Image (cartoon, rainbow, N blue to C red; front, side, top):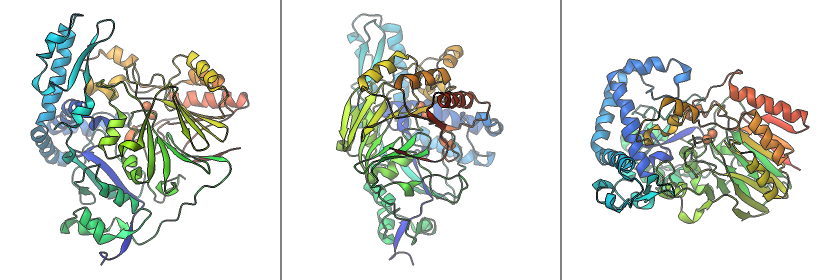
Length: 534
Ligand SMILES: [Fe+2]
Ligand SMILES: [Fe+2]
């Protein structure tokens, strides 16, 4: 009987955060964007699957379609998808009404706001939006809606009862793309109806390292008798290996895959864009959750893309995180929700969340973190929630470029003179193809975007020319191409599958080769890497 045993959570328990059974990401938290996604993406995908499942099944046979709007189930699941769709139509009716109101108001502004006072339009704001929006112009009379985002979180449009966690065991990297397929009930998966902000989530994930009485966690999570066996299978008596605290004199950087870097000195621990593999037998070496210290001083987030601001990992690290640094946002633009508010509403304590703006400095033990401009990669949308960083520790400077697209080389000249020194190590993503704007933002458009415009406005990072220019401006000793979405344990989020002929691979090969010619240590990272800054 496990009840009276002190047990650990197994290191291969996946914990998917879900909202209405759909994989949770930031745009599903912020109420206005959530409404738009439910109305213009999730329900549309489900409707299409219910009427023509075959279209989805054949599309997904083509690897290029993996990240597309297709449900990854066979036709036997039509009834369950239909039931979920009907449930959402009923229970999320208020969100559909909100989405419709946003569309009506946006179109009203386009047609009626011609540069004269916006005051008369307030009375025509759809009822459900009244009090939640301010109407504004830019200096050239282009009207837009400013959402009072904080207030929307206090309204029925933010409903924690739709949140749940799906727990299941994983023994290999393969996970289906999660953003287009809702998670249905299945015998191997335990759904817990628990809001993300619940403290019991912290207790559960703490059990990866600190054992707890099984009966206690079972009770706190209200596990039903019928789920006992499945729940019990997630726990073990076996203690994990203790993480050896880093006490070396040098700065140590460990690459965990994609844009996730753990930077440690004897004084401080920083984790950038956390996305971390679970632990199971595999041929690809990697760091996992077991390779994280008991306490993380700072989590750094570069931008609001699901592969950089990843709930599944953040929720599991919340209990051991002292501070989260996030880019400041625009304040109320539909496509640019506040990460501070998102984190606050999923249970990160307010005092732990620090917003940083461009050229702002945060002092840390043994050095500082500076926020720097992050150009492009967002289809030219006015999204401010993105920032690059330098981390200076023990007189070494690490540049965290994320997916920065070097659209205006002059900026790195300014940055170099602002910093007053060369960079020691530079990390830069080079996903230079990127999806079209609509791949991520389609649900928020209230008018169709012509295809040629869409194709021209991409979510792309730097190519060779832009990257080498950036390198030459910041003058690093070491250059690492990262954030390429290649590790097989995260393609469930990125849907990226490169070949040797893919442009991001060709361009980053060129960058690495040119760096070598210039005497710079350089590599495109994959899987795992450890560096020491001497
Ligand atoms: Fe990105
Ligand atoms: Fe990315």
